[in-house]
Amino acid sequence: MDLLKLKKNKLHINNIKLEKILKKRQTPFYLYSLNQIRQNVKYINSSFKNFSPLICYAVKANSNLSILKELKKNNLGADVVSVGELKLALKAGIKPNKIVFSGVGKTDEEIKFAIKKNILSINAESTNEITLINDISKKLKKITNIGVRINPDIKAKTNRKIATGNKVNKFGISISEFLNVIKNKNKFQNIKISLLSVHIGSQIKDIKVYKKVLSLISKILIKLKNLKHIINCIDLGGGMGIPYFKHDKKFDFKKFGLEISKFYQKERIKIIFEIGRFITGNSGHIISKVIYVKKIKDRIFIIIDTGMNDMARSAIYDAFHEIIPLHKSTKKFSKKVEFVGPICESSDTFGVYKNYSILKEGDYVCITNCGAYGRTLSSNYNMRPLIEEVILNNKKIKTVRLRQKIEDLI
Ligand SMILES: *Cc1c(COP(=O)(O)O)cnc(C)c1O
Image 1 (tube, helix red, strand yellow):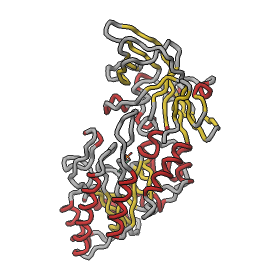
Image 2: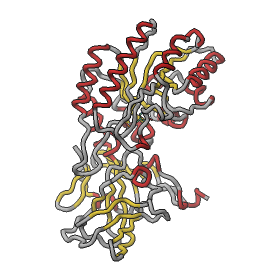
Image 3: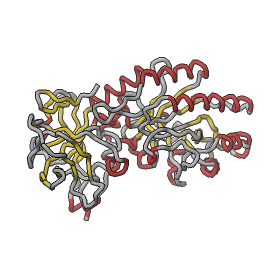
Image 4: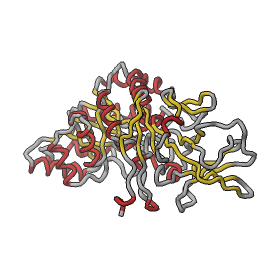
């Protein structure tokens, strides 16, 4: 259930009027609800209670340190894709034995650091990388636990820019190549391949593709048995989609949990997930001010102070994030309105609405569901400072990251 709600035409979160949080704060800013995050984690855990997996939070979705600390308190591990994210996860107090490291382009330095920290698994994405991890481990006189990410050649129905499990995508190793590595494992004396991982993409709503993945993994497990190779963990990745607007389709998490449970009953193997969006997506929003209401013949542009540099998802993925006024007027605009940012790009747009409630210059709006891939995708384009981040914990309001200063960018 979403904690962001309109009550008597005023927008609330955690039962606090958003107008109250505005006080003296410079817009735009990110606002996160820790309560929402806790609720999401609880919901995920309840769907998975039959097999209690390790949930590694995908740090790239939102790498705010206060959020990572909260997730650590809730017993989550981390899925990282760079040494920077790895250091951040450790800084949040997440134990190395709960961290997996994914990514197609890990460098020598990154691999060396991960080996020295004894993380749960470095998930390799090519035979070249497996060879490199083995060589570095040998130099460090270590045996390193690794995972291999399989490219299952399964198309997930999602935006093509966030699909990762097709054979033409750069991610993972084909099944035949993986089995070849296992057949030749004597060449790799300093690694132990103990995990198999799959991540087919993001913002997936249909559990059918996950069912395909599960049956494929079962087949691979039989082949591994025949080769007398034992792995002890399956990492099923992330990708569970969230609704971005009122009647958007939902991902059936309960049903998903039942499918995984069936797989677990059959295979009896430890399961890991790498979940990002579903944990933080609906916990974060951007509060923004209307700078201009610009009328042209065909429509009305609502020019807000948030740009694609602060929230890139609309520009990159054509993603729709519902925008809600902090104080909703009962009167409506008669023309179409389009929300746009101040950036000098036509893709700096946040959607077109009909019959939108009237807004004036100086009014405030909320861009909803920006808690995943919001701040982490933002940039300094147009010499704009990264914006403030504010956290709500019950009724407590706290700035956890200050807005950058223009002087610091020079
Ligand atoms: C991004 C990513 C995830 C998380 O995906 P979500 O859609 O945010 O759940 C998990 N695993 C890997 C390898 C990723 O790159």
